[in-house]
Image (cartoon, rainbow, N blue to C red):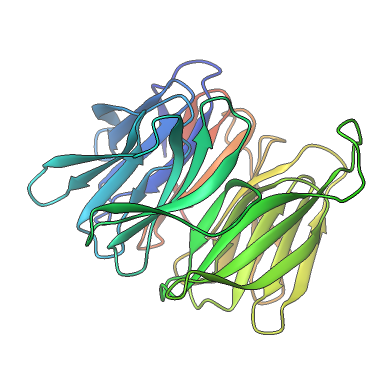
Length: 309
């Protein structure tokens, strides 16, 4: 087991990603930096500039690239040569908060937020054309963005203003997940009923299910039937992040009650739970071989452990 400290006390760890070979762990946090950790030594090997709103780090499915948001757009590193290229936004009044690779590793689907923090929208960067493109939607999106393993479906979280409500109304938004046909850039379905802001979405490895964290509730949707097959609700505190194990056997959920909980995907019943004493858990991730998992907290701490469930 490894305990990693580097983002600073109370500097929330927003995102974690294991390198394809499992030797490194990438993290980003509220301190505005991306950090690369050597899991053999437990030491930080590199610090990369991002921005204080950067909420993602990601490796491409073809295992050739690593990407993260910076102040001006996204940075993409070639894992073979080590060269890093910057792809700035063409709209200077906004910044990228999250970036997720497409299934073919050629496109980055991103959440973009305006500098005045009044709007957040979806866009993409196409490496083939070298151009940024807006996705057609007119509603606020959240950090919840994920692509299915086959690359055909994009899932995004949104809050939609309710007609006839006032700015002071506590229930002035609906919280939905949009499913997109990646090739056609069109919405194919909407998953509704979530009572709170959607913080993360995660596809199961086979693409049959989508896990959604929404405040005190963890939802699992059957994407064929478009029906919820599981809803886990807790009395207080929140589910913050979810991740499926690479073999699809387990769903791990980070909660800000300081625990990481595992759910059996055969029954969706709750399995083991862990409190690693790192503070309120914010994010959880699996290594690509499924042998290790990691969790980050709002205290700036990270734990990496061998999966034995």
